[in-house]
Amino acid sequence: MTKRAVLLANLGSPDRPDVPAVRRYLDEFLMDPYVIQLPWIARRLIVSLFVLPARPKRSAHAYQSIWTDEGSPLISLSRHMVAALRQQTDIPVHLAMRYGQPAIADELEKIAAMPGISEVLFLPLYPHYAESTVLTSIREAERVIAEKQLALKLVVPAPFYANPEYIRALVTSAEPWLQQPFDHLLFSYHGLPELHLTKADPTGAHCLKVANCCAVPSAAHATCYRHQVLRTTEEFVAMAGLRPDQYSVSFQSRLGRAKWLEPATDTVIKELAGKGVKKLLVLCPAFVTDCLETLEEIEIQGNETFLAAGGESLTLIPCLNAHPDWISTLKSWIIR
Image (cartoon, rainbow, N blue to C red; front, side, top):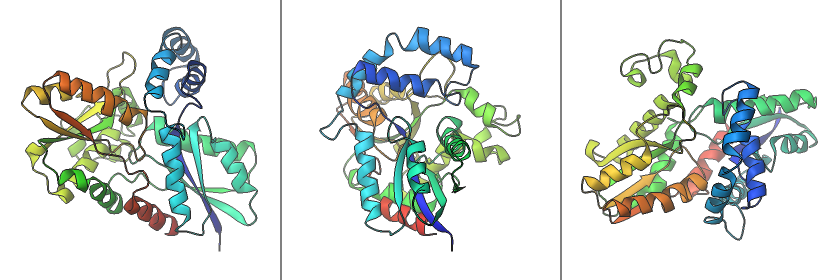
């Protein structure tokens, strides 16, 4: 039998919440051609002239507002998840980040050095496909294996956005908040530039070009982020038994001047308060681990926006993190 190890990959985080560390992290992240999809020289000019002079200071302040004694929440919560998973399986489980530490290259080398290991189940921890998350992680793993001539076979499962076990874990983790009185549930997904969707469309003629494109069957859906987040929402709503008037969908974390997926989360939060919503729940299913985008952008900034617009309470439903049902789901995927 092939002896397998598992490598879970997430986005990453600066080593420290200070300007130099954040600048290094942003430079690595934004210079990825899958993130800013422009030629190198244009990407270098944008990052060096328009992002790195000012954004590291703002981002460092944001990281400082969520930093814990264990460091970056994304890193520490991911480590807790892996520790819980290791208790339930004898298969070696490793954790890596696409940017920053622990690096994909370092973890693959550790796996390759383990006696008898010849296969790696590589699981990017993103439910929905996007070149800037899933594909760039896969390409980095493939690059490392090829360049370092590691005797490892990479096995990559499909995105799990509609996997019943994932949906069940997501619903179960949210139930304590859904069982309390609330006025509205907002599904806030990480946004993407529309160009990323049309570029990933293998047909070249479906995404954002066909009326109601996400509901019209197409081969494009296998790589369409928008279709997949809407499908996650549909599956969650059906399993949780929510009415159409109880929820809505938005997209957060816009960066730059390109046209991004809409509606924007900050705009929707204001609109919901203006419509009389007083108790708002926010769920962020694009993330399996709480991070800057959930803890600072939603729980802190989103709450301030909601209160200023007339709302009474905005509650962030935590990500899956190390929830027992999520750990059981990961275990079942690893065993299969």
